[in-house]
Length: 223
Image (cartoon, rainbow, N blue to C red; front, top):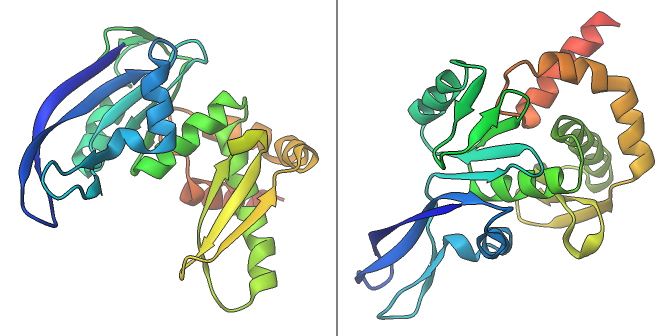
């Protein structure tokens, strides 16, 4: 199911106000066209009807895929994060905003930007554990950091565009480094940290680099 609304936005270049569609909920299994637009970035891209400028407009959205048993909230406000977290602690079976039953075992995540939403979808659709992927990203970024020297790696993402699983890393100046994600390395990390990660996940909705760093610090204190 996909839920959409008409909203008015203003072009930052020419000031023209115009109406666009925004999607509050997308079911990737039932609406593959909107899923494709989300993955290629066009779902959040609008074109000014006057000057033709393309603008990215981020807005809250719930992406769900019952077939793969996960759902991801894209939110931008701290209060909304708290609201969602509190809501999903209330009952064993929840009803999401699309009207679908959500079992307690469903993987539920919260992300704070469009790129992280896209990443979560690719991770889960590739049948990886996002907790282990976050740990893997730290490991790959650490290796790349030693190679490039002083300039800091600012962000790392999982991607499988073109059918190849890889870690994409970007420095503060925008320079890109790409490494193929080895299944052997992923399995080694899963064997080492998987049990700890699963235990630590108890109703944790934000799985990111901060979460992974905290898990590793706790793990290292125990050994």
